[in-house]
Image (cartoon, rainbow, N blue to C red; front, side, top):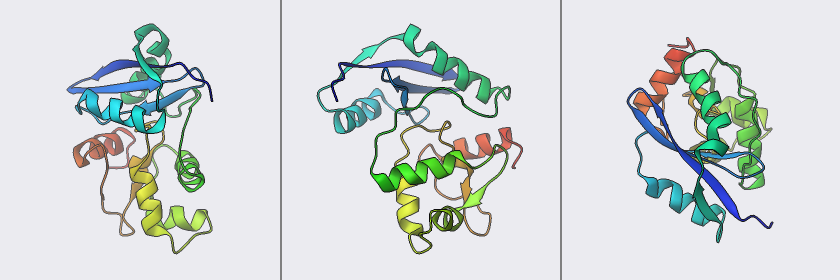
Length: 169
């Protein structure tokens, strides 16, 4: 894969600041609200070794606009291309997450069953935790078997905001 740059921007929404990044193929990263720039740089070093990070607000504007529309309640489904890098199992989990409709939730065991790997609930949880594109790949829609809100890489307060936005809470 010959890739020379990953473009990034800072995204602001209410009291959140987060970093987003994309390759020429699509959005590859949406970070944790209010996390440091180091979260992005270490992720890029791990997933795209040797590829330069380049600040480019113009190249990222389409992604920022779509995320902004989602967070303001104007958009229910993301339509821009993604460039996800993960193991085949992670990719299958992230694909399953994208099939959870806006305003709905499912459990970790539901996701495992959908993949035909009923016994892999923990592995599903680990793959969900590794989701590099928060909000867009909707890992916030996965809850405990009893409907309780469970861990979220972006923070439980963020998960609550997103589920309220989607009318789940």
